[in-house]
Image (tube, rainbow, N blue to C red; front, top):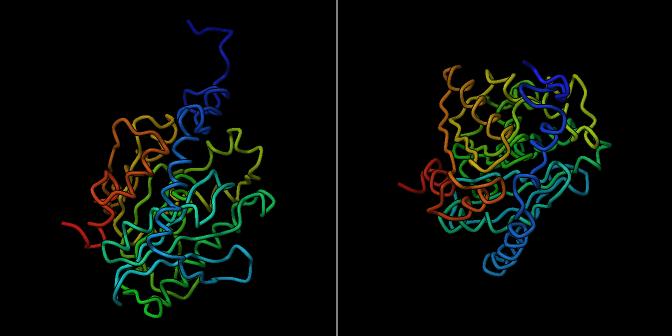
Length: 296
């Protein structure tokens, strides 16, 4: 018999409180602050070793730039990194630690900056347009950055995983006059690929979700545009929704005949999983380098 006092379900088997918790990383990652402090420390150390990046504009806005860390040599592969932060936190310089693993392996790394959601009055559409425009510029002008235009990869985590999903499902010919095959590969982890449940969560308190936003920016609804192999990943200590989102996106992508590999990080929460990307032997660092042809 159903409990008459139970809270109504608002998404799958989740009531409102459970759904809100499932899109609140602090509920499932109590060490969030400690991991953040580690990343900031390691990014400062990485900057000392790498030196300051070249800051390149892709638009007229103050935040419309990317930090470019160059490897030795030309015609090198290039990794584009889209950072997370619930769409409202973080700057490119905070993720310098991630650039070091690519530079040391022989790849350039471009870490994107963009307006945060509060800069856009809660609208995600201009944020996604910005990261798409940055990617288009990098791909179109790759040779001038010392990169091989045929070896451009995109990597995104958390809300950056969501925007990375939008990048790999972009209609490049229609919107930028570029080939649909401009990306050689993608790694998306701990991201959101269907925005309807996010819209129903407490994230709607600061994101102005609309029907247009959900339709246009849910990557799982635009899988036909994917033209590169994907690596997808989540940690077993992430929220149930972030785990489900990645599993279902992987299932949908492979069902559509697109190549995608799923990695499950046993014992990793949302923030700890990101740390493995900074390790060339880590759960995500090694497959990222392998996808770029820089590891066996």
